[in-house]
Amino acid sequence: MKTQNKFQNNSLLKGNDKKKNTMKTINLNKILLLSLIMVVFSACVQDDDFDTPSSQLTTPSIDQDDIVSIDDVIGNFLQSGENSITIEDTNTFMEGYVISSDEGGNFFEELVLQDRPENPTAGIVVQIDVNPLFTIYDFGRKVYVKLDGLTVAVDNGVIQIGKQDGEDLAKISASQMSERIIRTPEVATIVPLEISTNDFSDAVENLYIRLNNVQFGPEEVLGDTPLSFASEPDDEFDGERTLVSCETGGSVVFSTSTFADFKSLRLPVNNGTVDGVLSRDFFDEFYTLSVNSPEDINFDNGNRCGCGLAETMGMTNLFEDDFETQSTNSLISGNGWTNYIEAGTEGWEAYSSGGANASLGISARVGSFGSDDVSTIAWLITPAIDLDAQTGETFKFRTSNSFADNATMNVLFSTDWDGTEANITTATWTAVVDARVTTAEDDFPLWIDSGIVDLDCFSGSTVYFAFRYEGNDVDPDNNFNGTYELDEISIDAQ
Image 1 (cartoon, one colour):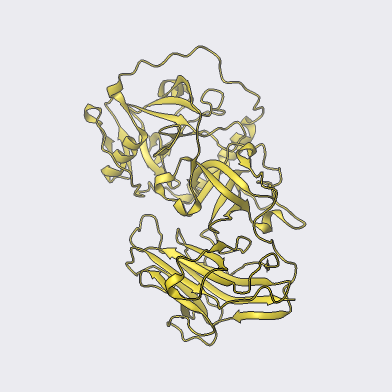
Image 2 (cartoon, rainbow, N blue to C red):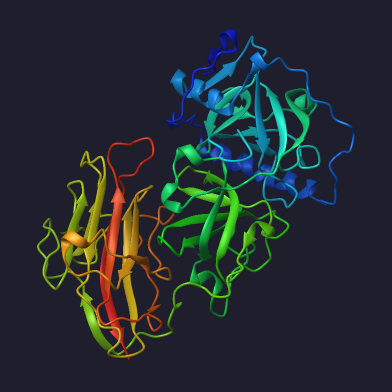
């Protein structure tokens, strides 16, 4: 239902935390609409060899008292508590800088704006029924958005601006574009906000970010069938790949439109930095990162982190556990495990289930759902493994999730931990980046194989491997209380 809202005296309510009061629409209608857009988009995207119009621009004559920030607009929307607000009877203009570009076809009929060129604090999507947009609103261009008559809502998981159309958020028409989105002469240098995958939250959505020391998953770029950006047979609408942090082991879905000019290029193999716009997937289930062009990927490091994947497991077992001797609903113990609760009340426990999310006999699981924990951090650490006593070591396991959402589970190793609980958090822990761990985009009943992780480039006579969970049960709007399951762990050597 449309809710009218006036910005009285051009003073907006401030707010920083994005509560997801989503404007729900029927997913089937969205999919049908998206299919229609695909057809139209295919007909429209022909030649991207355009230049931004060179006509002399002058600074718009807008009273400073009538200018508001993106953060003001978002705060006013969140403060309203409504699914959407329509701004009426005001002469207010929102200022922002363009951080998206449809020149390469990876964005379509939308502008992503952030509040400042460097150290941004808020971003928003403006829906416009025009393609292409980069010829007028180029990357870094400062613009003003005339807000009177526009609607603010959450659509596909992110806060957006458009025109109210029943219960839907429609696009600003081509005939109104130049009146609504006013260019200025300023084209700023956009400095990416450097964050890690552990920093993802509503506060950094719709911002131009940089991830350092990341690489694509080994199953996507190594072996006989490396993947393209978005031209594989099962890529529908978007190609979704996995970017993994060499530092934390955290990951994010790297999303590329199947209409992007570079969809058929192979993913780069090495590691380095990626600059792009942080967003959410179509159904608002996980974070995604989208680049304007392949030039935003700078994998200039000569090597990948990690050893990659091995073709076969070693024949000599060094450690294994399938948890079949554990007592269900009790904390995992014995077999050299360290089950440590760093924060909160939840640890790794044994469970057995024959339901839709069946266990593998008895499995290990952890999650903060129902705990009321402000923070849940739980470690499950193997006994020490000597990786200097033999060669050809490998590591494998299986994971599953019960709606993992934004909770995380990382696989880490340490060569300097002394084996005491008191020193777990002060030891040096490094990500086992080549291990495939289930994520929120995986269907919850599935058990995901880690792959046969090659440990042959690892060294140390006392090496520990850890499964570290982090979540909370106090932020229902962001869903950090997911559950992870673990089973069939095996470390072997030749």
